[in-house]
Amino acid sequence: MKQYILCLLLLFILSSCSNELSFENKEFAQKSTLLCKENCPEIKVVIPYAKNKSIVADSLNQKVFSVIKDLVYLEDQPVKKATYETLVSSFINSYESAKEEAPDATFGWEANIEGTIKYQSENIINIEIDHYTFTGGAHGYEGLQSLLFDPKTGKTIPNEALFQNLSELKKMVEKKFRIKYQIPLQGNINQTGYLFEDDEFQLPKNIFFTNDGLLFHYNQYEAAAYVEGPKTLFIPYASLKKHLILK
Image (tube, rainbow, N blue to C red):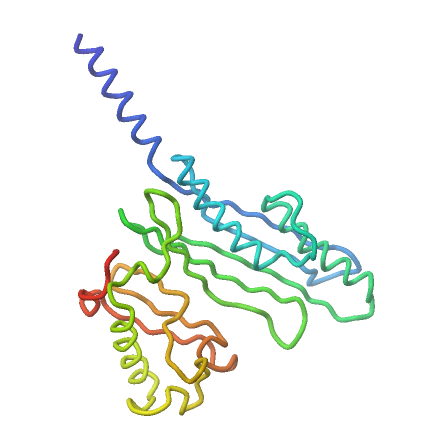
């Protein structure tokens, strides 16, 4: 009887473990050799891939895939088969098609996408997408994207759902932003050369959770000129007590 109970307990533990959401890193890469001897265009995608808890994992994985697709899929027609293999192949195919049409043009295409889990708690999974793509022009397109997920559902959490009073939070963040970047506390937020739309301070699209606080991250062009690089502001959790709902 004791052995039977122990077996049931072991099965229950194993079953519980298998239902825990976990991640494994997956890598997808491809390189072109068409009309190219060195520094050939290539693409590399590394992402944390959710496993177990299939409904939750599928929802999370689909969102991550959608973000990657927006970064590297350049064809006019909808992707025929939604896999990472087809995404990396389509990027190389787009380069090779362009090269065949203009063989004498200078091409140096590149895509490097890396996803990492920056923060995980019972309420939030925060995945960072660090991306760089170059398909010609003066410079590439790079930045960080913050994806926030509910671990119980796999659904994305919008920034608005993180805070109790966005307008009050915005005032606090703006004040700290002005102080850090030496913008006078009174007057137009763009008076020293920043590029906030309609001359009004805005919270960034990308907010990252850390063990000690929130990192407010503005990619290039979102708050300042490209040459100014990204702008960031870190605020400890202690300063966010009356604003932050989820952690």
